[in-house]
Every structure is written in C-alpha cells, then in structure tokens.
Image 1: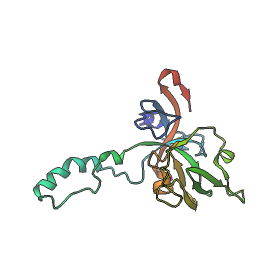
Image 2: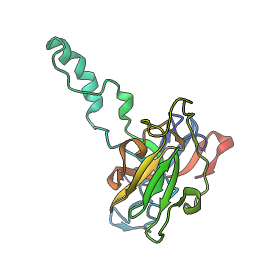
Image 3: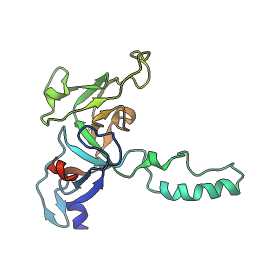
Image 4: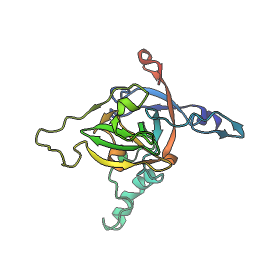
Length: 210
C-alpha cells in the first residue's frame, strides 16, 4: 500500500504529451506528493501547481467498463441486439490513467484561442499568455487545423472563458488537439488526480526528473 503511494510506474501509450513525453516512455508518479496524511504519518503538502504533470482518471472513466466490454457481446446475442450494457464501443476511450499538464488551478480564469491558453489569476486583472504565468518551462504543439476550418467551427482550438471553482483544475495535453483533456470535457475535479509525475526512467538517454 505504501509503495503505491510513494511511487507507481506508468508507461506512456499515446502521443498526446509530445514533445515532452513520447509513446514507450516510462515514468514514475506519486500520490505521496499530494497527500499530507498517509498511514498516520505526516508529510509536506507540495500542492498542485500550474505546469505540474499529473496522472489522472478521466471524468468519463467507469471502473466496471472492462467487465462490461466482456459481458456486452453475450447480452447483445441473447437479446437479439436489442440491449447493450455500454454506450461506449471502444474500451480505449476509457483508459484508467492518463498523463496531463496542469494549466490552471482553482480561482484562475482560462480561455483558449487557436490552442493557445490565456490565463487570469486571482491576483491579476487581465489575461496573459500561459508562459508568462506558469513558472515551469515546457514545450507544446498543436494539430494542424484544415485550411477550410474557420474560427467558430467545432474543435477549432478555441474556448470561451471559464473560472475554476474550489477543487477544479484545467488540464491539457502538450500535443493540443491530439488528446482527451479539459478542452473537450471541462474542468477536472481534484479527486480525479491520482498523483504527480516526478521521474522518467526510460529510455535511458532521457533519464530525468520531471
């Protein structure tokens, strides 16, 4: 139990966090960095800051989905395709763990234009570029928008302003438009954050703290 809190290994399986993390990379994350009281022992609460890499359970994930995917074909066969247990045809859409970057924290206001984030903190009266607010340095990229795609079309990389409530975080993929994140499903509840990513141990040439 303590080992799972202190350090858990996870393999990167998608390109959604490129260019920082690539498919096949192995990282370590820890719930210990989020908790102040584990097993009766007190720890320093490092909190969640803008720019942190975190492992999350996406808001649409259902713990029983894998079981449903196994049973569903049988139910459909018995009921002559009239009943199914799941509206999700692909289990890949319901991954247990995903890696995302924290862009905004409770109290922040956030909006996006062409995948670029603009932030307004509680201490500021105006929006600023994310790189002017977030202290952590990182690189991001975005998918190429088709030439016929004009502003205002769905998934154009822009979103209206929202202000995060207590316990809400705005998390994004570093490869914007490539992954499932707050741009698609809105603020993430703090209880969906499983731990902080702190180390990459594979490949060896990218061995580093994160």
